[in-house]
Image (cartoon, rainbow, N blue to C red):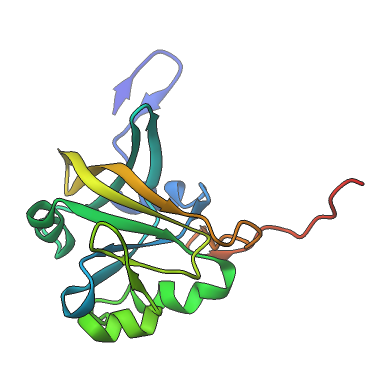
Length: 177
């Protein structure tokens, strides 16, 4: 432990860190690379807007996972923001044995976007990106994508949320007249 005056600091464990980070609610997305029989998909909740000029976003993937080498080779990916009614897709594509290829495309009812990656027409929003840069960060890699196309076909759809280790929902509120 380190004494910093009024506080004692000890490096938290990974379990403590994960529990504390779970207090921060996030949206839930599906990250896709490729389409047709080359489709790979993973559930992801690390999406951050980075810049408006140029349009950049950030996602974080495991450094030794399946997604990173595919994005590096292709130079592109898509991020699909899930709606509350797509919770089953989030669960399915979070599994290690998640569907790939044409089976994933059919399961998602996905179409091929302008970057050649799977895009979900039923998503709250989808962002098609070219790989702008990447940065190693511990056991993950931060992928910075330049947004080259976006789809926002369901502006009234309610986003799927994740909070404290489970799915969450925004409360329904009435809009002021």
